[in-house]
Image 1: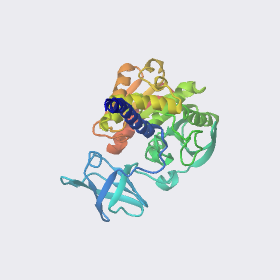
Image 2 (image 1 turned 135 degrees about the vertical axis):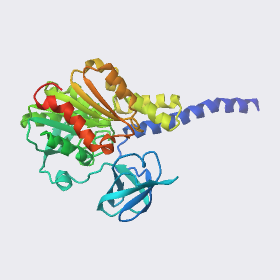
Image 3 (image 1 turned 45 degrees about the vertical axis):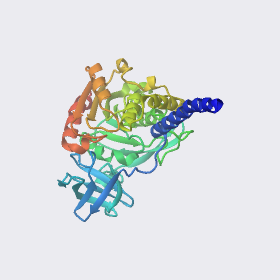
Image 4 (image 1 turned 180 degrees about the horizontal axis):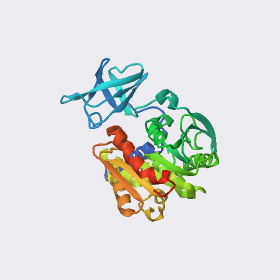
Length: 370
């Protein structure tokens, strides 16, 4: 009997360690695994030709206009018309494909398709040569000699850039919108995992080289979420960094550790498990979080940076953005948007978003530092 009891006592810590490691592995997977299909995290309770009723949540009742994706279609839902204790009602602004119906849905970007179908913009597609193969890119011409490389975030695709293209075109900025490794229309990475900017920056660098060889006098790097992390690495590592006139970062990941801590807190994961997940991520995709931490590397910044972040971001905490602005007030222009969620500052007030970005970029367009 005593021998059995000792075995049980010895097994308990081992079982606990195995459980913690398994949970840590699941958390790590959420950061580096490639997501191909949308996450339908919200529920449509009812819908008709004029409105959609959604299960009430912090996200579904936010101020602003949002895309609503669901199997077979996409709708644009306007400002909240009414609320009950459990639901919110929003008007349907437009529909592409099948109309919404009760079931699961995702809140996403407003515009879908390509620059021509969404806005009637002339555009063409080019192939960018990167170390993993050919990555396609849209090019939306404009009148000026400043070009922008527009980089989407985790699990996104080029169409998620559409809402920002009219702003750039109105400013006379030619936009290059590249797909990067592990996108549905781009080559996979060798391990078919995201590397959090550590390797994806090369695909963005190919877009920078294309812009400069095609007539751009200067380049603006514009990215959101993980795309902003990629943009920061591209700026830091590109041989053409001297031609980058400004960075535009929306809801940026400036420190991956803070994202994992935030994810752990929201899901009530113990800090020990989160630290385990951090180590697993570094090993799985061969990254060093110190190299991707722009709070540690803030002193290296030497380019004007516009940073916009919603204070209700449930995916990427906005605190590190505030801290980066505090560390580099000489270079970083910060705009915090009350009530905006992840990459939701444009959705809350598109006109204010465009005006603020235009004011920041005005010196760049005049040929001076921002």
